Image 1 (cartoon, rainbow, N blue to C red):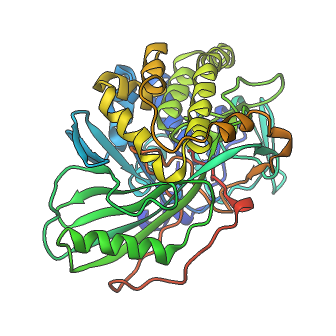
Image 2: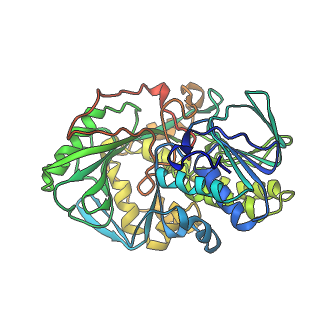
Image 3: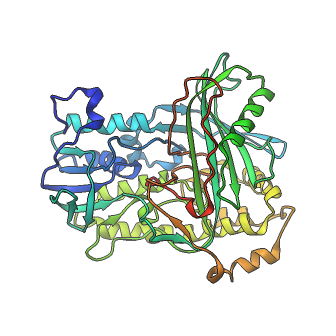
Length: 461
């Protein structure tokens, strides 16, 4: 609930005092808990919910994209309000081969996400949203705020993101991206997304351009790569995007928004989906390991977790979450193995061959299962067995299994630092900071992120 005296346009800055008791207390206002709030409204319409978010707005600055297979029939009923862009298919261009992927594709902007969740607070006396809420302690049945108040809940879900200095990977590669949302003077050449186009320099690992046409003259164009380092130079990304646009006949354009991130892609076994420990709140989103290790994609697991919690009674939900975590742990291990193949076995300049083979040999249902984290043994077999790519480094690959003690751990810190994990391999690009640029081609200085600061934020999203 929001204070009705506050104009709608100012509500993102309102600090509304939450009630002291609720059925569900959701700590964090990112993708995971926003989905959970909608799932609770659908499955438990008489339940009371408190959401606590430390920022003055919900959802940060992100774009989440997904396939239809990421949603169950039930979940589709409560996720639909969030979607603000849909396409019937998309394309990939890899190694000189072009393929149309006849799977639907949808996107959710963080702006629309915030409006939907805030509308829920407006409309329902059972839903209380408190922004600018600083949490000091979270337990299974209560949350203590920095102002001394304690909010008790029958079920507490902690979706605040990675814990500073406590969540680490001993080995990982990086997925890094810088996206420029542009306005053009003529219509974009395609009305559907091109999620991978590798017709760019491949010197920094597998690199591709991702384009998402929201409108005929408003497009997100993103420079993405799977790299051994976390260094990301904004100006260099802008030059690459500019050259790409020129080669496609798009000469007049201006940047209206930017999005960027550096995501650790784990090879080691830490931080997999887990159920709640005794006396602890349910750890959701990235905090609980609920992300696709091989893509950074969190949306399908966030939906599954929200559906599991909301469709069970409060008493049964923790056990159900534990069962769901066990189901996904083996798949998470396989995703990390795929990362090891990509970053340790294949030379950076040859990594594009892995992705070309993925889209060439897998049928559409298997592609959809892979991204939704529901792949089967046969799917995994088809991904890894076949003619090997060029540029293999077998000794480096084997050594990686023995090097954990020698590796410098990569610390995954909270959203105040750099990054955003809801961004995905090809299809889910989730990005942190946004900058509005009034003039064409006018950018601030390049940002270089040192390796020790490659960090995802709360999102897994």
